[in-house]
Image (tube, rainbow, N blue to C red; front, side, top):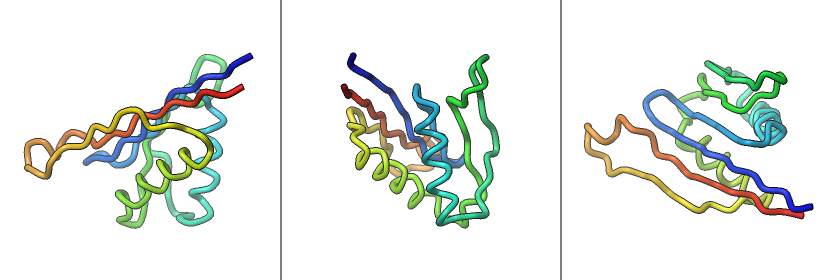
Length: 109
């Protein structure tokens, strides 16, 4: 049976946001990130009624938000996740308020 997944990784004025249809992916990314930035915290999270996390917003990233954003995207692509849309803005003050977002999908057996 084929397996499919969807994820978003956003970076903006509110920090890093990670969303995925696969809660294990979020848990794995957070445990790997803890190895490098042990001070980070989950600012906000959403869980399914079954208790599985599908959304989290990260903070206290030692002013490395952009690097963490790219690191998460890299980790996901190394695991077989395919970026299919890149929504990045230029650096004008007005547009900078909206997050940069990379959309990824996973197709596996």
